[in-house]
Image (cartoon, rainbow, N blue to C red; front, side, top):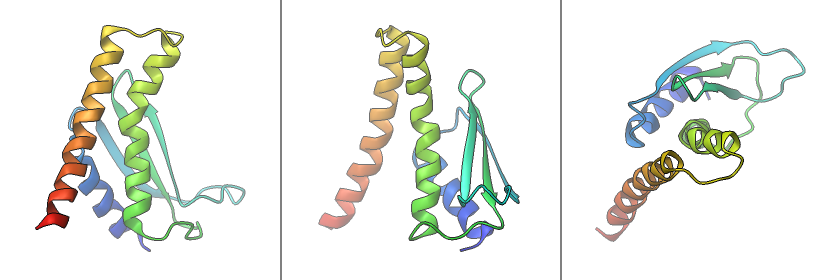
Length: 120
């Protein structure tokens, strides 16, 4: 599984999940030898920015690039909600409710599209 395929899949999921309000960069790096993962993501939810890094010396620990790319993108998708919950001490706010519903709409769009494809 190569970096180009991973990046293509990641960009697909960013678009599919409507993360157009995030600035997402993808790069290929060599993680430290102790870091065994194939990819990681670091985020700044306040600035809506994320850096996804592909480990060029990592071992394949996922079945497909699609799974790994989707996994990293879902971290970004859910991060704003998690960050909000931590910042508010678990108390619900209008902003948190709006974030939750934005996530639900994105997931529903993808899941319903998949379901329609299986029906046809």
